[in-house]
Image (cartoon, rainbow, N blue to C red; front, side):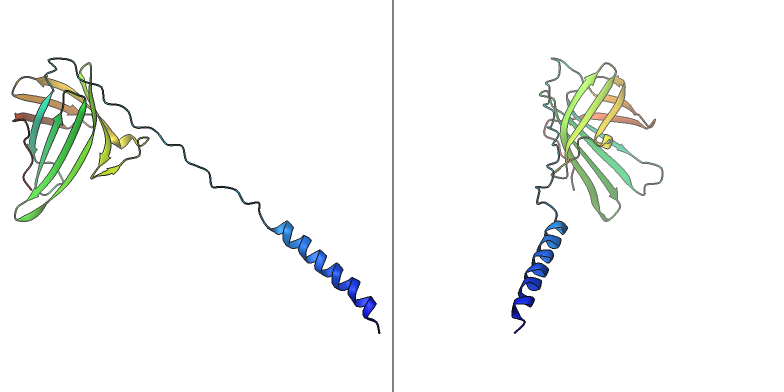
Length: 165
């Protein structure tokens, strides 16, 4: 009997609910695409550059139990491989294997890591750019000083030399 009175209320409440719910939903947007920094191109070293080669440093470091072995492989095409290994007696070696570019900047050796243990690195993170002052370099040895004051002396190794694990 009063059916005609209920129908407009039902329609109005349904319409009000729809408007309310429509106002609560956020518009669908695509997530922002992060900017990608392109990896730098390695630049070939100058002809006759004395730093080209494989350089092995073996040293002890304060606060580190064991012996640190570091192999710098500086290629003529400007690419580099940096391998560091911690030897601790009979325990298995622990290591780090990085690749990227290197360049000579006056009296400095600049190493830019592009890949660490097989994974791309964040190129904006300053930890992946290392700068060493070249104290001396000859056919058999180089002496470097890190930005933190650490001295590194390395001897030339044969082409293709790898650290034993």
